[in-house]
Length: 253
Image (cartoon, rainbow, N blue to C red; front, top):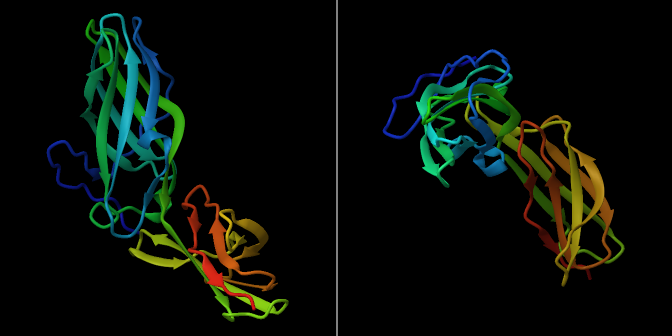
């Protein structure tokens, strides 16, 4: 299995490295300095495909009677204890005399920095922050955030058109990014919803759940009852993002 390579550092960018995450530890600190919030990508999962770079922000909000001086952070995959490192200095923006938010923009590149499938899922941050009167707090922030593999989903209903009351078969495939070989492969054994939206309406209704085959394919047969759109929808997992196929319109005669 590939290991993470240390990338070339560019101004303002923290590279991917073979960092070992800090050992679990209780918060340490002194004075009245407090970390009040840590936000990763605005609370959303970071979803990475096979080629496109993803930029995301870690933001630490803290307060101290003297004001905030500087902050540092590492983030890593909880499964492999590897990720971004260097305890990079974050830029801090004061909200007032006592409170500031310190942010770092990270770039995750599945091709150059060498993401591995094993790193998909929960990630964690170690944060270290200091105040202008030299108080300091360091801790493994307890909340987890998620880095997920991009998923694709297709749907094809046939025959088209179809006679009302006749059988209609909807096929499709669920695939997801493989970071080990930078290609997409079928996602086996996953529950996917077959959904229908009647022509002239805006809402899809779930008809049934269908499980993907060993190669990620889907197949379900229903009775055609009205004109409308058929699609598959996947809710996602802890390691893989959600996906919805474009609706395939079927004219019912």
